[in-house]
Image (cartoon, rainbow, N blue to C red; front, top):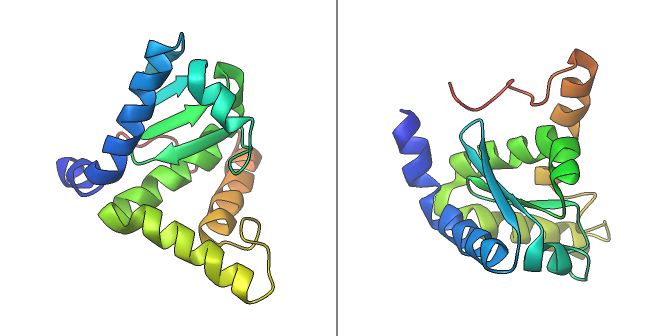
Length: 142
């Protein structure tokens, strides 16, 4: 079933792979960690430091883009939850994530902090921190 998770999330991962290529082409780095491609530096670092992103890391399917390798290490538990969400939602992940943020905003809530995708990631990140793990499932290679 592992291949199915990669296939189902492939459309979102394809966007992430384009960003990884951009990172490599602009001096960034790439590594594979627990079945996930992590990239940092280069143009993605520049983009993550600016609005509308302004984030340490962002997940696009099985690709996690970070501003630095340190940021990726720090955010790994949180971002791996988003990888699992992308596996669950497949090609609808980006749309579902954006819709959830818009729905929160329309209800007078914060588009990021009150987004259910982010709430789930924060919950698992806290649990992983209490257990001393780097990810809520202690890795995706199941």
